[in-house]
Length: 263
Image (cartoon, rainbow, N blue to C red; front, side):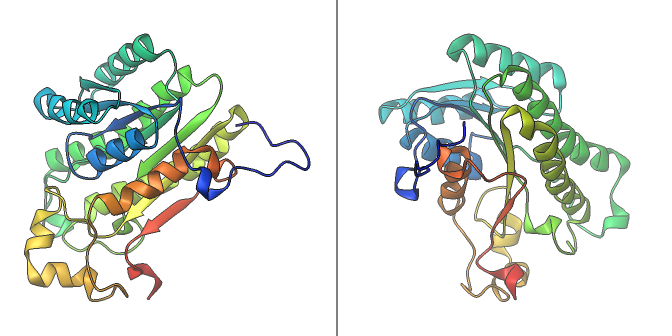
């Protein structure tokens, strides 16, 4: 977004919207990704929905269209660069330009002490959670001639010790570092790169933590709000970071954890 002329007020929070924008969301068939895609649609964006399974994407797309939105569901594995490239080629062919990217697809195939993880589980976590993010950002940047906004979903587990989820935490720390570096490298071209670091959110992905009283308390007992989040509570931050209301925000990690990391 070009700088406002002298004496012109920038967009105010009440003006947060994604009208006339196209946003691609990975991991959009459920959980945080689905919530962000729905919020982007309600804010006026056309949304491209990506994840590995076409059937789940079709259900979300049909629901969004039923509410008057525009949604294009495309199955792709974010850990496979050739599928990522094909995803963007189809999305650009459909809409011309992708203005926003939300990197949300992630995996966590191992739960336990870090030294017990197998090489294959380690490689899979890195493949999707880090290499996948880099692949989608590379594809996005190739077509972002007029700038754009990228939102990477990180985690508070990338900012603190992550017992039993150590390699997942490593990848999320990497996402935060990747966000800062690419904000510096892509900023001159008008592309902003930010991240959101959620605490515990009630999704199928985090069900093991949510359903276990002791594990859940590791998050909620330290959070001033004394509870875990719902996916919709993460979506608003993504809409803000994708919108022109955040036009001077880049390289930032927005923490949404009920205050856990502040105590």
